[in-house]
Image (cartoon, rainbow, N blue to C red; front, side, top):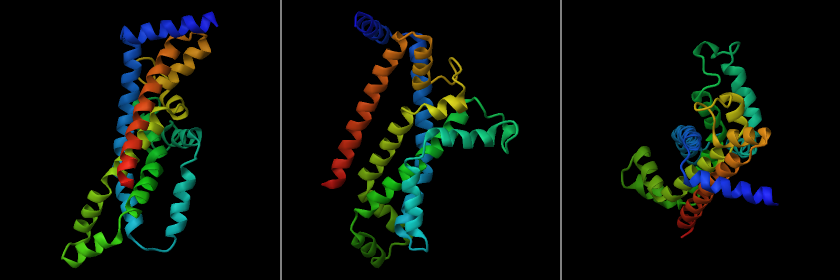
Length: 231
């Protein structure tokens, strides 16, 4: 118990002192997670709008598949992307493996279903009469979609926040595609795993506190925007 208490105290002091290595790890995590969330939002939000607006054969099957992908293990995506970007893969010549770009690609694939499904849910809450009224008044499909987006903005923001919370805490993709290189691809979760393997808990606990704080903040924002969609 004394060992655990001493480790926690040391971790707090390390976090407060703004240790260079700790800041570097946090910066990498925030960079790759923010980038992947941005790209997933650029793909998932329009895709969610299309699925919600359009009527086509197999629509329910597509939604079911997207819901299934929400529970897809990160190591499965890691293996899939690894096969594509390794030297023998299709994108091997681009030398993407063990880089931040590789992590971003994997994380983007992980959370596209999250953004898409949450966007569909947000749009489904909006009364269909908004779009029909806009179309009746002369708005084209794009303008009508913008009107619906404005009404569903809180739900869409909640979708993006949920996606960011998913990738900031994942470890499988970051480890498999990034390689956990110090100062380059080492994220908070991979660093915690490494420090645990080494039996050195101070940095791991400090990163755990920061990750917990970020996750708590993300959940507060998510609950806030989710609450706005229900009012």
